[in-house]
Image 1 (tube, rainbow, N blue to C red):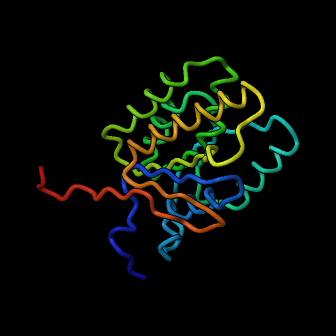
Image 2: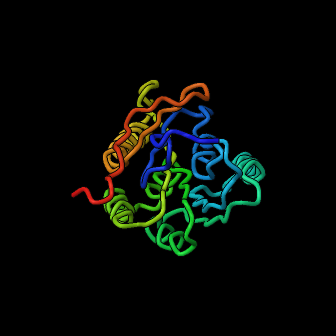
Length: 192
């Protein structure tokens, strides 16, 4: 099945959406090529979440079962830049799921979020393999009641903006449907 060149995976993509919007499933299909009707291709999954309770452990198990055997998983809750470097050595497209949990881990650890984000984004320079980030869009709901909730929402919004600025493609998911928000054409060979 042929697909439009505009649907080919660019160097960096960001898939945003609310909870249970279909963003992880869509991103997995992008990375493995199955969104375009192809047979699943091997890929790298960088998991930022940790099974801190039974509910989260159940979610992680469901994600693993859905992905199947074409994935190599790197679990890294804090050092995303190092995980990206490790993933590049496999020579396959990479999915980072998700920036929201990564931000939560960074804030809980008292890490410098801006510095960690800078380091992860610098890692993408000349990366060589497509990378798809998944993140929650938190700015569409109610204002959180607590100062910590508001700080988290604001930090997530800033991080999403920084990653979206760096991304070649940004997709917003709602009710399982993708909305293309940004699609920067890949440079043509010899263009410069």
